[in-house]
Amino acid sequence: MNMKKLIRFFTSKIFIVAVLILIQLGFLLGLVISLSEYFVAINFCLTALSIIMSIYIIDKNENPSYKLAWVLLLMALPIFGGLIYALFGGQKVPKALRKRDHESQESRQGIIHQDKELLNYLEECDPIAHKQAKYLWENVDFPLYQKTETTFFPLGEDKFRAMIQELKKAEKFIFLEYFIIEEGLMWNTVLDILCDKVQQGVDVRVMYDDAGCIGKLSNHYDEKMRRLGIKCKVFNPFRPRLAMQMNNRDHRKILVVDGVVGMTGGVNLADEYINAKQRFGHWKDCAVMIKGEAVWSLTLMFLQFWNYDEKIKDDFYQFKADPKCFEEIKDDGYVQPYSDSPTDDENVGENTHINMINGANHYVYATTPYLIIDSETKTALTLAAKNGIDVRILVPHIPDKRYVFELTRGNYRDLLSAGVKIYEYTPGFVHAKTFVVDDKMAVVGTINMDYRSYYLHYECGVWFYRSRVVDELKKDYLETLNISHQVTIEECRQTRLIVRMIRAVLNLFAPML
Image: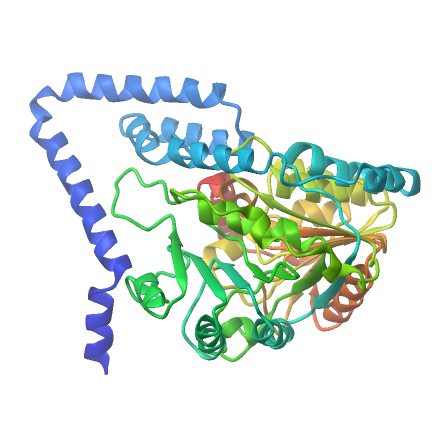
């Protein structure tokens, strides 16, 4: 058994890629050593490169924390720092990816529209909510909808049960886009249904992130899916490149059935998300289901990703549900699905969080597995608390990544000092990504409060106003706090000096991790 595991490890994609990258690094090091007789000249050139790169970084229009981390690294390693930045830190988003996303954005023109009367009515009712809805429409082309029913799932198990029911009802198409897929009870159950639906003539498409599924799916798993009749694509394949552009992952979780039903949230397609497998204690996650007009935005999100490398593009309108399907649906407040891309200059996920924090009059309740925030978000949170807003943040007590957990705890002291309340979910790991504000606004999606979600990943979420989700999310949040530990400022002060120093160093380089 151990030998089988060993063989599986040495033949795994992540091991092979790591070895090939090390070979490239070895070749580069060998080249430098072979030119050692020109040490003075090489030293001068590399140091000059670091200085030039430092000036370039400072001049770039990027997050100040990200720039500071790289400049500090270049100062600490003046000889090799510039080379490291050129290989790993320079072009954050590849040009091909930018071009693809720009073309995808253009494809939306004329396909998606905003009911102006709806926005105008919201402005009359609530100018603060209107500003958020207007931001998502005017800056990233995601409209506000009514005629949409909403369902909140406080646990992954709840989403899974509903997901199975909705997949079985599919008659035309099924779209699945997930960061992680892993064989087990959850995925195998879904896969059986997908295979049945293919036999019934349903158009089934699956898209997964290659880095997210490394070690979870076998190599060329997409080929296996295609043999089953399921259309399948792998996002940003993990390749052995020294100058890796692997930071831009597809972290979205999208399910669309027939253009009528859509789901998103933190829940991936793996057993720990439904507590069928224990990894870090009890896994607390959340998701939402929408039925109605707002599903059109989720449908377009998927199709735009799917079509970027297709020679013959889909006719998007073929996947738009007949409006007659929604005649019996009652309005459940306002619903606005949206996505965030690292290839533009809009940090939609972070800006939406900040808008909600700044718009609060009574409370802000947030849930995130990782609390690794920049100065903009930290300032919004602390200012809200100082203004008397009840700001609470729920994070895990049992971490999935130790160094990330130390970074999360490293942010406690400043927030607690300002009056922000922080809770750790003692039964296990929190993977939910939610915001609820003042009994009127909420967000459920895939966006963590960290640099990766805010700046590097493709993400998505749904903004709700005066919807049933708002009340149900708040109720679940307060019930969860009852079984969580409230962190005190005294606990932070009692942290050992060496731990505080490690957290401080990690925090400096957090944007690069």
